[in-house]
Length: 199
Image (cartoon, rainbow, N blue to C red; front, side, top):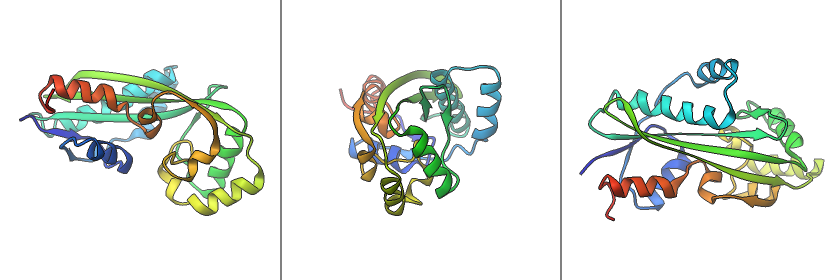
């Protein structure tokens, strides 16, 4: 049976695959994501395509190490309606700034997945979810950060929707898996095609 390798140590992505009963291994891609993102943004790339390009970068890096396996690379990013992309917060103070910028507004999450084999991409999918953040009081923001910092330090958008982060939102549109960071259902479809999973 073909081996699936997740090109990430993301706890959320690993949990999704484990919970879905998908056998896999995980290897960190160890790419310079910040430099790649900066270079791509300088070229004027759209948020959707940026997520796709970063997912491919990770998949190809690990695929060269394990060419016999199917390697799944993923990336997700938050795009505010004014076009600003939010990165992972580097401090509690920056997380607070992000939450204030998101307060009372709507943003998009783009979650991309690319599967590579023998050093080349063989499948890809990008999904979008739209999240409506309710107006957040200063009291709530401080209390929320008391609960969730530093656990959300690795989370773009400063939330874990499977935990207290759900309190940020008045409404969400799109797949729950996309919000968690991976378009899981299309991935499962492809894994059935490739006989990694039983159809």
